Image (cartoon, rainbow over all chains, first blue to last red):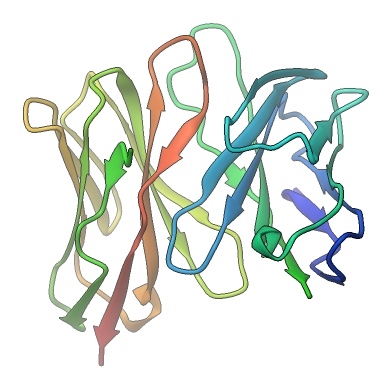
Length: 117
Length: 113
């Protein structure tokens, strides 16, 4: 069991540049989530996919942010024209959803820490 | 609007004693509640969960209690160990229409040896 994998672990970029993060979920998991966490706060929901369909996006997700999960496996999160306020830990999580599910915890990766200078 | 609240930012407990972490929520449409532990530079790790049809769930040293009328859940750790020192987040998921999870702001637990 390799768990949820995120790449890169750290990214430093200059304001105005584009960045892309990758997430590989646990292989049999069909739901994939992106969260953002800043210091002293809990994870903040950004978006989630079931298979390749993006089912929900947070209102906080500006049009500079886009996420894809083209084949229902790995996912990418792109931030265009980065701003200093985008500096945060970006967390990916996955879960297994099925008929009649009751208990389906999220399993998180170790995150990508973005610093925008 | 913070729908899941952890009002205690920090808690210190002696090793061997009970740690009680609290969480309040405002939305009665939540049906599934979870606790996560987070160490620095790592992602949150799932600890224990409870469905809204139950009021208690136990797993080893960890017990979660749910009081739906008060919209309150708590995590009990007995006995507390120094390795339990971490930030603990509670989370809640809606019953239908969306499967997103909403997290609290966390409580930093320090277990003193």
